[in-house]
Length: 159
Image (cartoon, rainbow, N blue to C red; front, side, top):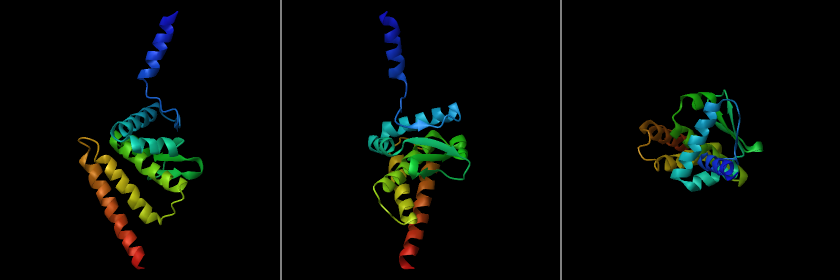
């Protein structure tokens, strides 16, 4: 009689349960990638993980060119291209980046979009640097994006 309960307990303890966040049931592979990415965030920076859990209620997908947020429903929307063609560390970085946008929205930080993007990419960079042997192209891209948005932000300040 106890054996079925022990088995159920073991199964539940070994699963990644991110019940706070609902992932759109579009593709089981995508759900596994999201679970893996959340595990990476949790493993390498629990503060960023806590931010994701606190501010993101769901993760959806769309055919746009970039990932984004839907603040009215506290959703991170990941582009189909990124979920299909990105490494797990990039998906983890996307979750950190987009949850930073949700943090700003929920805490009424009304920054100009160029400045907010720069801050989100800086947050993404700090996270990526915590992952051992992270892919070089991810760090190069985030550095490039920070420079682009810094340049745009400085230009706006002087206009």
